[in-house]
Amino acid sequence: MAGSDTRERILQTSLALFNAQGLAAVSTHRLAAELEISPGNLHYHFKTKRLIVERLFRRFEDRLSLLNDSASSVQAIDDLWLALHLRFEAIDAYRFVYRDMAYLCGEYPTLAQRAQALTARNLLAAQALCESLVATGVIQATAEDARMLALQIVFTTTCWLSFERLVPGRDALKEADAGMAAFYTLTLVSPYVSSESRAYLHYLRGKYLG
Amino acid sequence: MAGSDTRERILQTSLALFNAQGLAAVSTHRLAAELEISPGNLHYHFKTKRLIVERLFRRFEDRLSLLNDSASSVQAIDDLWLALHLRFEAIDAYRFVYRDMAYLCGEYPTLAQRAQALTARNLLAAQALCESLVATGVIQATAEDARMLALQIVFTTTCWLSFERLVPGRDALKEADAGMAAFYTLTLVSPYVSSESRAYLHYLRGKYLG
DNA sequence: GTCTATATGCGGATAGAC
DNA sequence: GTCTATCCGCATATAGAC
Image (tube, rainbow over all chains, first blue to last red; front, side, top):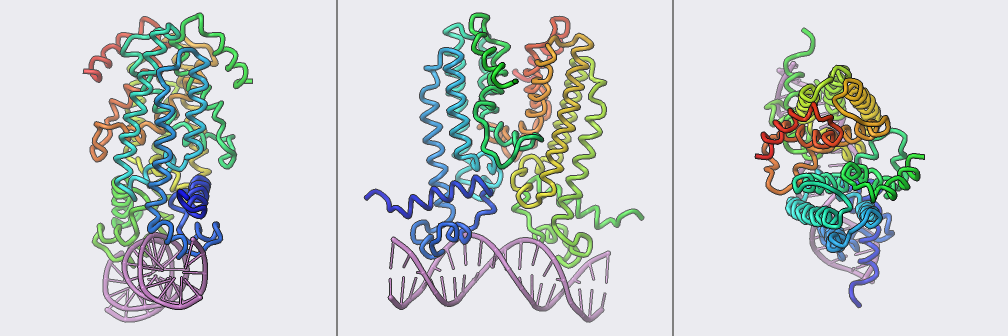
């Protein structure tokens, strides 16, 4: 069959450990121990740690690309909220990527380029999204405003979950709150939202600022 | 005299190497080689790598705290621009701290707590700054808007320089552009700026969007 | 203060038996 | 596919001479 069961278990466990303990802290030995297989067996499935990381990175790219593809179908505030929510969930599922980005780029320069390319695609998708919101009258903004807003959205979705762990009062071990992150991102959009579309914003404000 | 010359050279060179190559990539051997001293001599001055990192982190804290102390004296857009500029310069001078934060927290849990405490102080300073801007009429915002704006400013100053390296077209090796970063941060404030204070914003827009 | 030499452990990766 | 055993190199840290 397509890929053995062990191979998939390795990828799942790697992802969980990278997310929980950091890319640098998870050695191939620890990984094998967690999987209850031998280091030799691990090497049979993935000749290098790099290959594991690259495979996970590709899955992350694929998942984000899927979300990017539907960017221009966002045509209302609640569409936007859902899109942001799904995006933060995806980033949280692979949170080691953005969180350990500097280390990752240093160790695997190939991935540094891929990360830049991914950011470029995210920017294009966010611009399409903002243009769609302007076209449907959900927000009112000049072309330049829309471009800056797209940049803000990409910046925020990329970095927010990493930043959140620095804010006191949030438990670093607890899973990230995608809803909270999405709400925060919406506040960036809020100054541009036309009066007819503010209802959903107020609903969310009540929900997350209680 | 207070601290030998070698000790200070170690700190300066460490900072430069950490910034340039990443905390994880700079071993004590590389550091000693760069300094043209022996690993044994390095160990004489700093028993562990951790002590070097902690000392640099403290300097970073001190430099930001100085800037935080003057937050409530910001009373015009050009004050704000200067304050942001100085802040980005400080963060850029110690850019390894925020860029390698995840690795740093994993290796030195003590510093994870200090980083949270630092973020808390930054948030308080940013809130004071926003309140000052509201009080002087430079911006118009509800108390809740001001709190969110403060959060946005801290988030941006903390993460922007790391994010910037992901945006294609910027050379990762080139030093960061504190002016560009400050301009970006100002766009967050711009929706709330009262009409009398927009002149400086337009001047900066012309300068950085040329 | 500075050196040479070295201890000790861990990390990635491999060889070869089963 | 999975194991045991092992190699090699690097990293932190140390000992002890000068």
